[in-house]
Amino acid sequence: MDGIVTDVAVGVKRGSDELLSSSLYNSPNSNMSGMVVTANGNDSKKLRVEDRMDCPPSRVLHIRKLPNEVTETEVIALGLPFGKVTNILMLKGKNQAFLELGTEEAAITMVNYYTAVTPHVRNVPVFIQYSNHKELKTDNALNQRAQAVLQAVTAVQAASTPTSGTTASESALTPAPSPVLRIIIDNMFYPVTLDVLQQIFSKFGTVMKIITFTKNNQFQALLQFNDPVNAQQAKLALDGQNIYNACCTLRIDFSKLVNLNVKYNNDKSRDYTRPELPAGDGQPSMDPSVAAAFNKDSSLLGALSPLSAAAAAAAAAGRVALSGVSGTSSVLLVSNLNEEMVTPQSLFTLFGVYGDAQRVKILYNKKDSALIQMADGNQAQLAMSHLNGQKMYGKIIRVTLSKHQTVQLPREGLDDQGLTKDFTNSPLHRFKKPGSKNFQNIFPPSATLHLSNIPQDITEEDLRVLFSNSGGTVKAFKFFQDHKMALLQMATVEEAIQALIDLHNYNMGDNHHLRVSFSKSTI
Image (cartoon, rainbow, N blue to C red; front, side, top):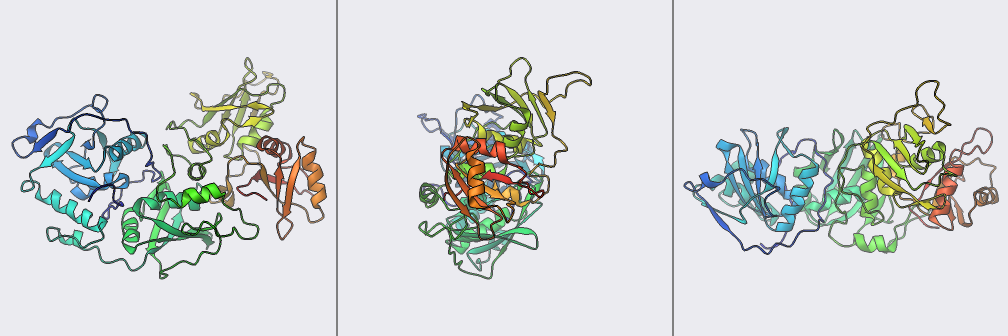
């Protein structure tokens, strides 16, 4: 079998590492001639610890510091999300292994991902680097068990039965009852969207349809593959895994349904085989370009460090170029601000769309720059990926991770002219409540705004006048059926950003504070 085959892990858990990884890296061209290493009993002594930094990319990877009781299946599982595994050599006495992937690109993707996210086997961190060897040529007689496991995995990948050389446990892969999986997310402290599920599960085959819903206060989804075997592979590999460290745990079962009937393509449901479906009344629709992109089988995510899921979804929609930085700092440095206009409050409001901003400090000696401390590193990454390069008060702002770990408050009694504000106890944080619906409604800055908490006596004209007064032009407006929510479209993204800064939490009377966020839809 040539090329990358759909991926599978044979009942192996990889600890609590993030599942969101990339399959699109720029691979360096390697014109080096293939070097064969014979790894039989006599020559295995020659295989030595290699330094990844000194080795050019190779489809053979050297894995070190494996736990004593590690199995071949667990080592193979490290490579499966990235492509076909074509050979394996275990050096058990040395707690090492060599893993050969089908392509150099797959190996580069794997090394890049595990450089940012330390892989664990049985909760033990292991180290992965390029090998000096360009190919593994193993003696099948001396490497029999490993070859049997590899054949079992390949058999599942090829949707055939395992070969006679497999062990009983590896043959216990009974036919999958349905191509539809029921997915429940436990401990959902970060947003998990339909786009994120597509990104994760598409590693195991073509995802055809997804329906998401909330039941018993839990986010759930039904996801249909084109083949029951792919559904089984995904269930084996992902059940019990965390999408992010220590949260968003996947609970996966087969559904009794064998086919999903999707009527609308929007944030709650999608049929990837029918991008022409309507969005449904009041539901955000998909851009035609995004629909076309999602109709392809390949993953759309660029090089991802462990980000909050909404950032991943934004990247999947092709809207955001994500930085490959895997820094964990929760403090952002924002520069090229309009120092005549910017205030800690305006930065708090804008960055608060993507996380709970705790402290904001405009720098005393450089008032076009500010430090913003978010609640955690994921929120900082999310805000950076969405707001870097956007226009605020007429200037294109730059957002990067700061080397500072916290934003210091001024010493007591010191007047810093109101340049530092502590928002830790602000009632305006959008994401304090775990599992809040706000997690599922995070979108890149757009000209269309979503308004909620609108009083019943407020008319379309009232809102048009209010938003025109923020210095922009209201191009379109649409009330939702209950009139408590609406979509309002400004002429430009910059005008929408300005309106959100000015009017989020605006008192509409009778203690009705208007809530404003960016929308994914157009009117």
